[in-house]
Amino acid sequence: MNSPRQKITTVVRNRLHDAQGSIGGLWADRRGSTLALMAAGLIPVIAALGAGIDAGRLYLVKS
Image (cartoon, rainbow, N blue to C red; front, side, top):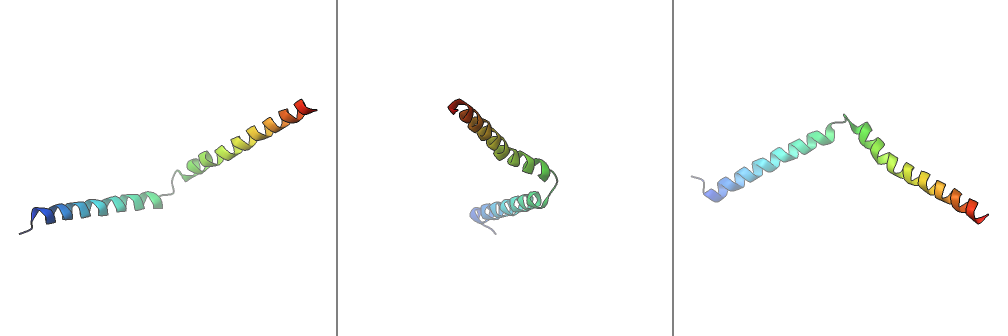
């Protein structure tokens, strides 16, 4: 007969195995990746646009 500690270990091991399968499934799923890439790509584009506007205003003020 299994001890309570062995039962708990088995349950935890099974849950970790299930969680790894779920994460692996999410990693392999490519649907919606375009939206995530666009959102991540917009951050540097907006930063560059803001820096360009600031640099242009600084140039106009100095001259």
